[in-house]
Image (cartoon, rainbow, N blue to C red):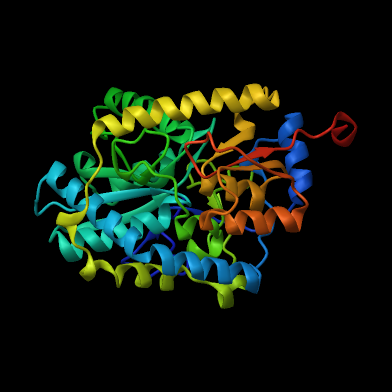
Length: 376
């Protein structure tokens, strides 16, 4: 019998409960991981590389972004909190935020703070795994509904941003499958709704903005996400267990996770909600069209066959630079402050950079197609 229980990483238990299984695993190099992905030897979720501590120079850039965007992010989180409470209604029944590991984790922790402290609504925050082509963690959802006893009609999925909309589609598709299985057993169903801070793909149900900007938590990895890795799903995960993760305890001295939550939350009292415009539905539709058009253009310009090799938006471009093998960095304006950290990473990794002012987002990274002789 599995003993399923949350872990907390480096967060306060009130801020986040991870429904993940800590594992110790073999680390691969980024290059070897990329080779196995592209040859179909292994799914990306089966492998992981060891995350290094960010350099002092890179942390200085993170600090600059925090100074620039702490107030903006606080305002957008509070705006989103107000929208969710208005949509779901005040109630003695808590709202349950279920963030998607791991980009959604800091967003979910901040959103819980705003809902409980400024909207007067009880709220809990869990963080669970969803994996492209593998779906959402059904064991974690079962735990929430059958063990934690959350109200499925007051459950909201949370991510920090959308890009191409791949995870949004994965979430909706897999939740339809999950709900169908629940219905067949006569069990309660989950209303699938996704809330994000920045909806540059125009695919979320609730969002504070459609603008692409350097959300500070999007430029670091585990050291701003509770020291937890992205989720892992391989033979080490027992049947019925939560998806896996690595906890990077060795990075504790470089950890900014809880400090980041406190820093943004400290800006909450200074937010003037009435001065924030909110997001119109027309903006979301327009953003969808712009994203689709630009992705098509990029595929044509660079003869890219696999759309999964195109990663638009500052945050997604950063993830490629940190976790994949990049072929090219495209920026809308090389002088814009939001891409400074990307240009630094490109220089360190000898990745070519081009400017394209047509893009409706600040940056886009292209993943390198590994040469056949390199992967055999």
